Amino acid sequence: MFKKLVLSSLVLTSSLIGASEVNIYSTRHYDTDKKLFKMFEEKTGIKVNVVKAKASALINRIKNEGEKSPADILITADAARLYKAKSEGLFQTINSDVLMNNIPSELRDEDKQWFGLTKRSRVTVYKIGTGIENELSTYEDLANPKFNGMIMVRSSNNAYNQSLLAAIIAHHGEEYALKWAKGVVANMAMQPKGNDRYQVKAIANGVGKIAIANTYYIGKMVDNKDKSEAQAVKKVKIFFPKFENGGTHINISGAGVIKTAPNKENAIKFLEYMASEEAQKLFAEGNFEYPVLKGVKTSELVSSWGDFQEDNISINTLGKNNAKAVKIFDLAGWK
Ligand code: FE
Image (cartoon, rainbow, N blue to C red; front, side, top):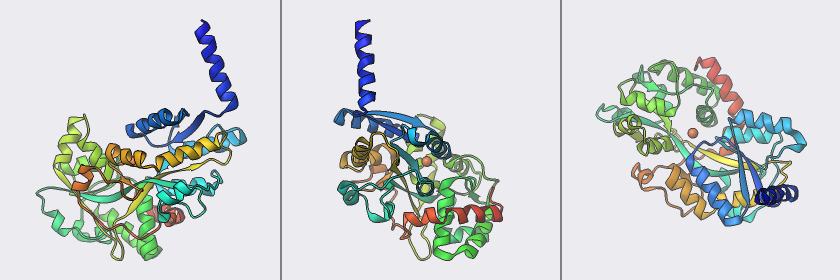
């Protein structure tokens, strides 16, 4: 009884002074993040409270909570969502030498309001033994009628696809992007359905021949306790496409500090930790992502997929072109 009282008054005190916690709103659903939060807690003594939901729900929640929002940080996957959160006025500018030094400029916001913490590329995946890999080349070429009935890709309301189309727009303009999206729709093996893993499982099972997916999902499928995923992924391989005048499409998970953050100092400490060597290693090893910090190695499995040249389009551009991409997907009839 006495213990309980002491504990609750401690909790009360710490929440009153607000000095020893940080409130994270996150769309990421990976075990690696849980581990990272724990490591941060142990290192700093700052308690991490997490609210998990989809990006649009979290953005609305922060807006509805207004001035009194407990949110210190928003973490989301995909550049366009970070851009959206920024354009809705959710973030504040953060001046941190650690973040400036550790995160390359093309992977963070021009106004220092959000920061890329990990990278992933969006690639094609093919079934081993079909010979289709000899036909694969650029992203542009996925609209080539020679791939009729072969492409497995998720729906256009998915942010990863929107950012891919945003990159096409950046490289070639809107008119070309519409033609491209129509071409890919015409080549689809079926109406879009399911997530990235679903597309990979489909081609492993002979539905379609080319899947579009983010790299880390391949790693997560290899590493999965679910035997059907581990079996399926043995039958496929990654091919890194390029843009005709660029490299392989890169996207990020990233975060920003909320304008009304009640624990701003802790929030900055948290972001700096996420960009540190220790955290970057865990992103790479635990979630099969590409670290943003130079010098940190990718996991052995990720390295085995081979090297590729990253596209030169800034992550900032993906967000700026997002609204156009959504409209073009609609016009192209990409469900
Ligand atoms: Fe994802």
